[in-house]
Length: 247
Image (cartoon, rainbow, N blue to C red; front, side, top):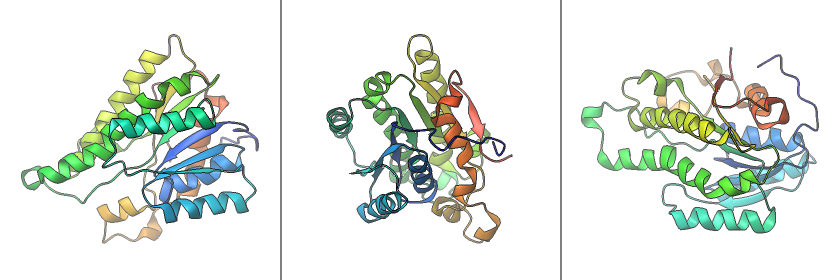
């Protein structure tokens, strides 16, 4: 996607919700979307981090963002319904949804994997994206050109050893993405895809490879072309695909 050159106003007047917006890829995507004209809803569990991203968007001259604190681990269906109601009242529609939030909780063989960790990771990494998408689907369908983007990972495709519930969740998200794409492509304007970011310098990757040199990994800002492409109008008609952000 390095050869993709979006216009500066690619996302003008679009309302986009980003989960895990306080750090890493979510922070980079939120800032990038705002720089291209979008109004952001910054969702995450740490208000301080969300406020920092909010300030960065404001300082850069982007449209005024909104902050929505939510702990995906403990969120219930009624919490997602309340979020959808707030979005409807404030914006009336949703043009984009980036599912970026995820937890790993370390690498562990299945034989030693704790039940508590299994449930917690699946709740954040798989159940939460399903619940959130289901809650805001009506708002997405009100948009003339809506895009849902899930975060993929090759460890889910491979069933890579020791990645546990995280890999299972990523595999499940790929199936959910394709299922949604097939359900929605016939009679809605909502397209659904996923992005595998590759080896990016994030806290989650550092948790997985604590002995590695983070300098060997790319900055989140370097892969934003793929995110802009899928979130903007240039990807109309593209649905059910997993795009690799790095060549």
